[in-house]
Amino acid sequence: MNSPVKKQVRKMKTEVPGTLDKNGTGTGKIAIFGGTFDPIHNGHLAVAKAAYRQLHVDEVIFMPTKLRYYKKDKAGSEVYDRVAMLSLAIADYDYMRFSDMELRARPSQNYTYLTLERLKKRYPDSELIFILGGDSLEYLSSWREPEKLLHLATFAAAVRDDVDTERAKELIGKYETDFPGSRFRLLRMKPCDISSTTIRNHAAEGKPVSGMVPDAVERYIQRNRLYTKSRGLV
Image (tube, rainbow, N blue to C red; front, top):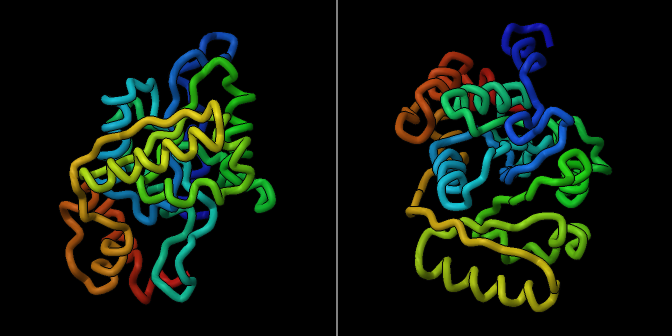
């Protein structure tokens, strides 16, 4: 990691400072937003803004995952690229922050319930809210250690229309029955057809991605030729 970008990533502040008192104890509401963010786009930012407004959180912490879940022969970027783009995207929002907790975790420790346990130990007096897409509710019970997971945080499901909302309510009712004490909120969003896959495909084909990502992220993608054959296959 010798490039200026990589050095910049190493220096990035990765703590969660805004909700801490002088003893380092969290006392506010912290929203956790995980994902590959390859790249982060305007839809992600819209979710973070909605969480801030609707859930009245003190901070939204973007927590990129170490692994990419799509095929390795497809265009993708390196971890330091994803972190650099994330940093550029959230720079103008004082309530949005970055954490490298999952990037630093060993593969055997890289499960959501373990991440939440680490956060709970660090900020025992904070309320943790985990943001996930409404479609992820379908699979939440199959995540590792669901009983522990669903008692470590409130889960906020982003829903975009009446169909999503009704299905989310149905699933939430089931989880509240199967896992007494679990807590859920709905995060209401406007329909959005932006996806990281579309952005990667556009960039690979030399098409513009303006309007889908912040301007600074678009410039980063273009300047570094991300997702092209010369730069993006990893």
